[in-house]
Length: 252
Image 1 (tube, rainbow, N blue to C red):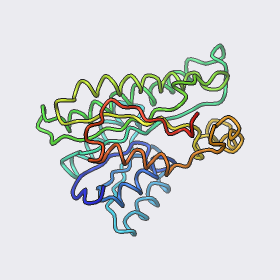
Image 2 (cartoon, rainbow, N blue to C red; image 1 turned 90 degrees about the vertical axis):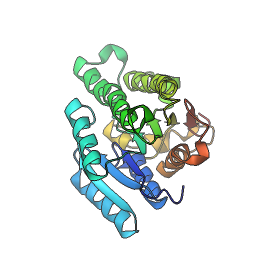
Image 3 (cartoon, one colour; image 1 turned 60 degrees about the vertical axis):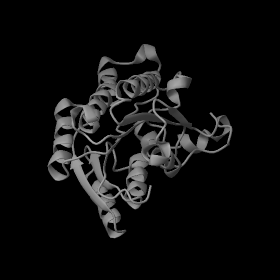
């Protein structure tokens, strides 16, 4: 999407993994990129520095995408710095250690759904409000990051994660219809097993490599392969696409 000009893109959870790949590719495509992160200052600063060194525009904003206050502070920073929002990648998310449903703790479930579902729905609403022509916005595009887990269910591993992403699929369809006449497109990408450090945070650092046999393409995906799908859905090439959920999962 070359020539995005002064368009502003916010990516939650944008400092690592898929979010970082989206940030880099979007900046190269001409977006002013706002990278949200929650704790890793070094990763966020290094990513922004790399983008600027390559000639792009990047800002970082710290904020917990699993809380109302964190999300409000992130959007306030975008308002203050740019005064507009044209694209939003709803990417912040967490997994937990493999477990059966019968062993899930209340604390685990609250954390999972606060970040992956409640926070994501609230953030999508904040983005839609700023983009919608109904509220004086100039239109825009939202891309939610779901997961192939929403279809598979992830038994004996992360059924809670899968359920939290199933809600994102439903959000995508419903919100897309809600704002379809207001200049806002809403789509989702469902990554499969992607080689990022999210697996290590869930106690399975080798999951990507060890999962090749269950993927029809016989390999894990790369973060940049997911990012390419996200950039397409953000772009004018996808101008008649809304409410779509694109599998980027190697056929799984």
